[in-house]
Image (tube, rainbow, N blue to C red):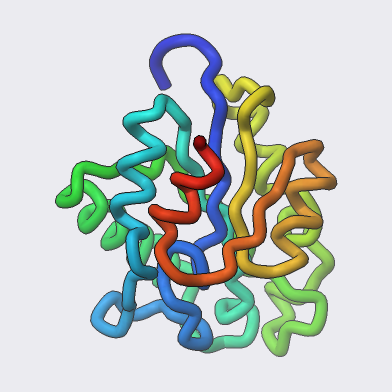
Length: 169
């Protein structure tokens, strides 16, 4: 965290950076969205802080342990670095109000559509709100952005780099 405040882009993970194959958690099975590494590199070059905010109810459902989320994020960071791209911080919420695992069964202020993950990043990093935005693939992503006072953009699929290029123009 160097320098003064900068605008930030908050990216959903599944369906925006990687394909949403139904609770993706194993790097061997992850497929990147077309243009995702290039899009992150574009944001880095443009001076944005880049954050990932992702609901991970697969943890609450007992499909994989919480540690696996961090392992996948480390793997993603390594692959992005190879493409000259960087995510500044990954945030996730493993909770779900109907979770079969009692330890994760709750309404959490960080679970989208609630804005908690975004608000935590806004407090922890030197984010300039002007020019900051979120990109998600679900209405709950856009609702979280709106609740945090940020614009949200619904990614329709295709090339993430081309989509972000259109937003940044």
